[in-house]
Image (cartoon, rainbow, N blue to C red; front, side, top):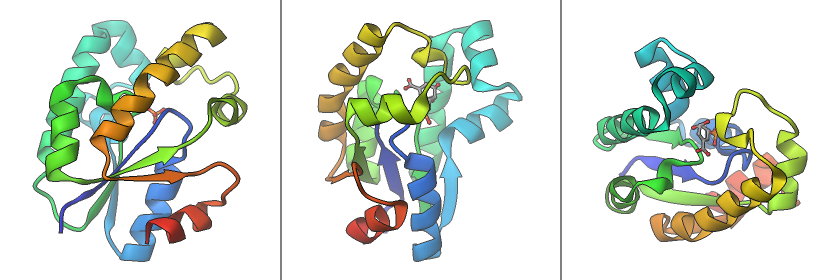
Length: 161
Ligand code: S3P
């Protein structure tokens, strides 16, 4: 069975759902952001600040490639993983990719003001533009979309199952 990848915008619940889904399936849960942080020994904000977004995206692609051959894993990805075509192809071909679809208004409520997310440090209008631009990329990359609005974590997991 292919590894399972959860994709979606920041705050769509990839980590929470991923942990619950991996428990249900008895798979190992991994988070690409945490793997990058442990590999580079830097936090996400430090990586963006010191080396820039392009460096972070390189790390993301390397991490995704390394995970593509693993079995019995569920991974949570960073919200921008679909920005690169190379990643979108990997997600389409090497993973069972699930898009957690969440409305922008719910995301804004959930995230609030979070300084640990560098790309959230923009105006509301710019956040909305980034959200809108990515929706199609998530759809292209995934073979399954699940709406998370108004659903508990367990309900989302049951939908996926
Ligand atoms: C990013 C989302 C973050 C993290 C980084 C960039 C993005 O992950 O990868 O800050 O481009 O949307 P989460 O989606 O887990 O917040």
